[in-house]
Amino acid sequence: MELEIRDINNAVVGSYKSDKLDPSSVKKEVIHQVVVNYLANQRQGTHSTKTRGEVRGGGRKPWRQKHTGRARQGSIRAPHWVGGGIVFGPKPRDYSYNVPRKLKRVALREAIEGKIADKELLIIDNLRIERPKTKEMVSILKKLSINGTALIVVPEKDQNLLLSSRNIPGVTVRRASDLNVYDIVTHDRVIITKEAMEKLEAERL
Image (tube, rainbow, N blue to C red; front, side, top):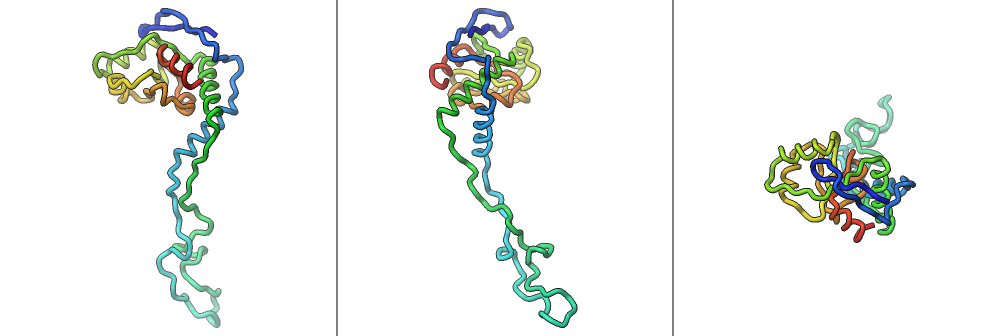
């Protein structure tokens, strides 16, 4: 497979060849499994409701058992009372679970192939900003015809790039080593440097 390499002015400056990527058939079910796992692992699981034994009050029987004409009641904190306990309500729990490392690797490759198939992945030769300036980053994205949300993948942490893009809505910067499937599928376009692509193929695909 061969892809165009462009510069920050959107001019073609070369080509990128890959033996690992094949966008002809994308396994969406694998991507789905890993995205569901990622979202489950992000859940804090701190939700909690009180049972009738935990709600304050209700220790006294509201009225005597017989001869009142009303239904018998044992506590004003029973579940059918307003302000009473909750039956089978959520309690703190851990939602996280593990998926095989190989499955994550396959899903990452499939997600990238999906972006290539949809013509939503752009490889650029280099992306450097001399000093933090949002205006300069906006200008680069405009030249690259990026209109929606964008994921920028770089080989190593670039503080100037991070500071220049953090105030632009929908733009996220990730190192190649931190890239995950959820980031890829939730952004309209993926911009990846040639060096970051090589690092991804060598270490994670």
